[in-house]
Length: 166
Image (cartoon, rainbow, N blue to C red; front, side, top):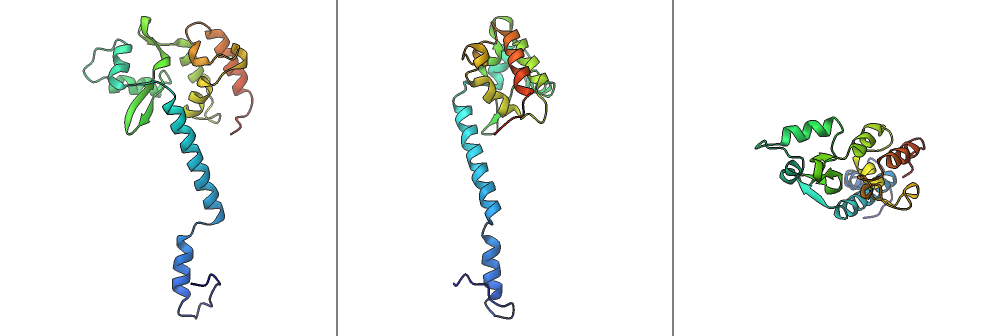
């Protein structure tokens, strides 16, 4: 079929119009390409982060309830735990747990509470936590939660004072 726009009185006009409606416009193509790239980065980031399921998270926090989902959900809402959905299942980054004290590292809770809504979501925070950080001698913040709380908080404070580029 010719891609030239037929006159509306032409009997082929409705077929041409239906075909055009199914084709994405240039902005839609850009949008879908960006969403595809975002999904790839998200998948790579999630795959590179050791996660635990809800039951294991409950054990690491010393929760004894038979169904800890409500407690963990409340902690997520209060920005006291990082939680992601992977294949419709709750997943928690292992690095956030202070296993010896059965808690989430206080430095991470502080960082989560500091994160402004317009800075980026939990995925942006996970990205920041897992990248080498020049303020920590190129260590990743997630690897230093137990030892460098003040430095992590100061580094994140500096990070959020600048606009997020992405």
